[in-house]
Length: 467
Image 1: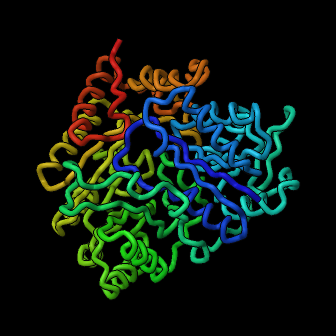
Image 2: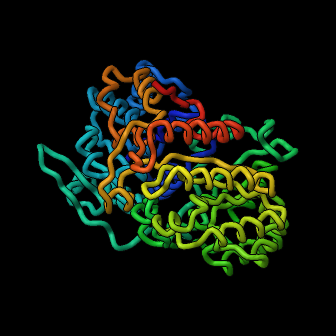
């Protein structure tokens, strides 16, 4: 079976551009099972802005590959591109078109009804994709597959099993553009001295926490970890092939098991691996012992979603820790010489202007106390988040709306179609009953000014202007 998998372009400039793990894992698995695989990382091929002709050219190149199956990853803010891309492809080409990734898992009905693909795959894609490639004639009865056909919605149940993480082939990086096409870390923004390439590594999938603004647990329905020896073997292989590297652990919750993290660190040190690395965790899931172990094994950065410094807000979003935990965790990380890169969410329904300003003040003050980066986000109505499903909340356009629609207008002849929270969630936020319009814009201008000191951050080029 000939299979082409595509990673869509991001509409904003993220730093750095790194190889996409999703299609690289699927590509490696399909190849190991005897299929002919081609990977397209359109985030590398297409810059910004994107034109209608760009999509036409990509569609032609993929059609020349004559795939039996075309699979497209779907991410927030990429959906208008995916829609236009699939529409063009289906006009003149046969073969199955499958949609996968986070968005179909969170909003499968809207996905299959809004985009003329043959189906979408919800949840983890390895086993469903193998099933489809093995027996495409059974598509309508394949688990994890949703189909909208002639006005009827076919919703197959999710599998109860998953592909064992330790049996997955390593990501097929050789099927992606050469590493030189990705962001080289020789940059004023980067803090390492030697030219370094960044590679993503998946050590685990899933997160057991139930934060009300997060949809991770609906994508990964269980938390599973790889064998530490397998993880370190993969890192060693990358270091051998590419020299100086930086490892970005993509896990949602890296330090959930401190024993597991300690095992990874011991293996890194015993193998003599000196690569620096980063991870993501929570302020209440670190302590002096594990931070010391991580630092000695090369950890230089930890990403932390703080969200708020107000206890009643943290309780509302079910974060599971307090402001005191935030202060304690950040101090521990910075005391060990590890860079803490923090994010916050503002414009939550229970926040007053004073609450928001207190959080912003804390973020700014933390920079003086050793935190290396602070980024603020407006609450965004992503599909599937509990906060929006459990409460009646009114939405309004965000300051990013107009420029996101301008971006879409570059490749779509009908950009107004995408002026909707499903297609462009970042173009919307909530109506906070405690904020006047003047309050909202005062908050936004302040967080945008802070974010702009850490370029480029997501949406940094889509500030929006108040009308």
